[in-house]
Amino acid sequence: MTEDSSEAPRRVRVTAPRTAARATGGSFPVAREMAEQSEVGQLFVASLIRSQLRLALVVAGGFLVILIGIPVLLAVFPDINSVTILTVPIPWLLLGLGIYPLVIGCAVLYIRSASRNERRFQDLVDDD
Amino acid sequence: MTDALDSTGLQLNPAVGYTALVLVALSTVLIGIYGLRISRTTGDFYVASRTVRPWWNASAIGGEYLSAASFLGVAGLILISGVDALWFPIGYTAGYLMLLLFVAAPLRRSGAYTIPDFAQARLDSLLVRRVTSMLVVVVGWLYIVPQLHGAALTVRITTGLPSWVGPLAVVVVVSLSVVTGGMRSITFVQAFQYWLKLTALAVPVAFILFRLGADGREITAGGSAFTADLNTTADASLYGTISLVIALLFGTLGLPHVLVRFYTNPDGASARQTTLIVLGLLSVFYLFPTVYGVLGRIHTPELAAEGAADATVLLLPGRIFDGATGDVLSALVTAGAFAAFLSTTSGLVVSLAGVVSQEFFQGSVTGFRRAALLSALVPLIIALLTDSLALAGSVGSVFAFTASTICPLLLLGIWWRGLTDAGAVAGMLVGAVLCGGAIAATALLGPLAGDPSVWLAQPALWTVPAAFATMVLVSRATAGRRPASASRVLARLHTPEAR
Image 1: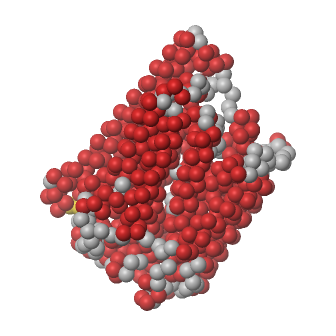
Image 2: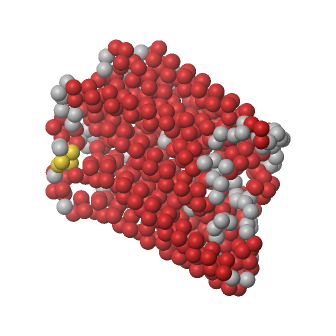
């Protein structure tokens, strides 16, 4: 976040954000424009969206099954409540500590696969 | 507001409270001014020029997101209802996982600044934009109110001043920093406040655990800290738990102050990186309120009976330590709590002001400033007129509301090209009426006995699917209204930026 003061832009009058958004809205590469317009390109995009959605649903589904599984398990086998490690009952350990590594694990898994999908798409478009 | 605490005389040394509050307010304003000096362009003002690095941005998101409900409410709820309360921090954290999976990168690529901007760009409809704007404003106001209740509680306990001083102080500091600095300086302030909040919880806990260990006292009282049930009325059902988790997981997707932060990332990939860091920061943070709650079950159990459980974090250090050490640690948690109200409130005010100023003031900076004042004053009035409920619980209702309204719009808008403007409006209205009705009914009828009350108290499990179903069915029925630009917009959302 440090900024070199010599290249800092001059202060300006702030204007409506819609125009600002358009002005700074990101540069879209030529390959991407082509992908959006040609028929083959549209097929590539559609397949990218499908694979990203499938990935997100699989990760979310797996996480939710484990998450919802915990209260269901505790409701079906209430005896688990009396098992303790160093006086801390198992449900407290699972819910207070155990979930968080699972959340982060899911996130890492997803980011890797999602970036791989995007790289594959870009390779396809660049070859075109 | 409630006076439960006055009778019990549970108060800290006022000098401690004043010192902590003044220090936090001063450092917030100073960092804001520093940020203003380097806030030069329009882009800086609204979205910090979209150049905020992932670590800064993630700290800022954490600073903004960890509200009164997290800092005070989670420990209070654990004090009252034990293991069931652990679902709150899980939901608050895992909400960001859902955000990462379904929203983060596409939303960044949309190039829109607010949720209404996104809705208009995606569906090409002014009506959708209006409806979304109104929902965003309602959500924001509802979310600010519990922050101000938390401020009222904290100021009363720590300084002995009347309840209205806390909310007023928060609104004044927030208005000052938002009106002057814009997004870039707010990013600095929020990032600083995450680390302040973490330190404010972690250091006293370390001292307390060390002291208890040195005294040879059993930290968990032989496990009875976990089993003692302090409030037998709060018995969570399986339905209630699952519904709460759904509300928290999907409610995070629609929070206006969370989403605006993603526009400050340089590109989609860094939006994902930011979210991953946020997950780490939140996971670490939530360990501490949990420890406070467990310790509170042994050392401050009377707070549960007096309806003052949210004060657990503030009072616990003073219970373990006497004299100067107790004062310093109490000052630290007080500062952290105040930082929590300030950062969440200012984040919400910034994002609401963005929406309101574009809707009613043509997006000029003067308009932004007027809108910021408006966004802060309305919740202040509501907060002064209403009583504080359990903080974590009232924030939970707001999550259920966003999960039933804005979340379906975002998810279907990003992933389904069949969404139409009619479908979006119908779905949001159905979700708002059902969920808002359930929340209002719970508030008006009070705690009911029997089965129907949990269906109303935790409505997400049926209102979220109802909103999704309405949106899909109405969109199918009005397929002719699909915007011609749908394919192009979706392609833009999902294709990566240039390498």
